[in-house]
Image (cartoon, rainbow, N blue to C red; front, side, top):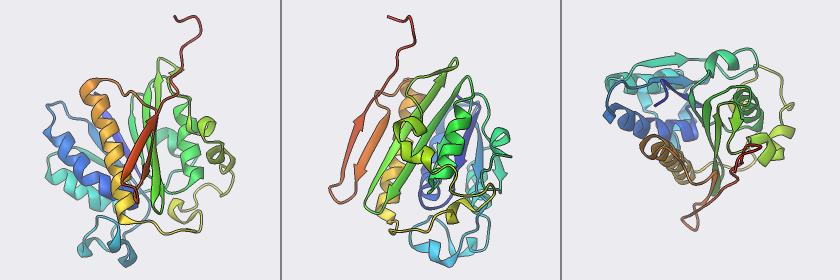
Length: 233
């Protein structure tokens, strides 16, 4: 198992994922991974309708608030109360990490994805949603090889948005939200991300590279784009 599990984004999807993730990780045999929680934002009153925060968390950094839950379950936790930028991504995401990317903007996705592409071994599980539909992508780097391809290759719109904001701008405010995010969709995406993580850790592999989900139809479907290294049979 990876020595570090890094959750980037502790808002709509990330806060819903954090509770089940903590329960799962704390139930695994030791040595358990270090849980790294990353977010530069604070919980606000408007977050109560779709994010897993209590009234007592209002005004508190999101990563720090979720860290209290993880520590109470006995997990070792590191808080990075910052937004992802080109200046800190190399410090936050390291060789061997298992990264859960739960942000709501393409520039941050592109930033993390391109950094992961420079690592020899790392795993990235990225989740996002747009009102009633969402998706989860799996990116695996193994011995310097990209098993699944990368977000900016499979979804060009992610790479094209990379220059939409200056480094250091609040990731949650990078784009004006054109459509509302729904609690039900956030929960479905968080569940799909946890399922992907579970399959990796318990079975050692995942038979897909992406999952699409539809809250209205209560449906999910997966697809794969596994690569074969040059010269391999």
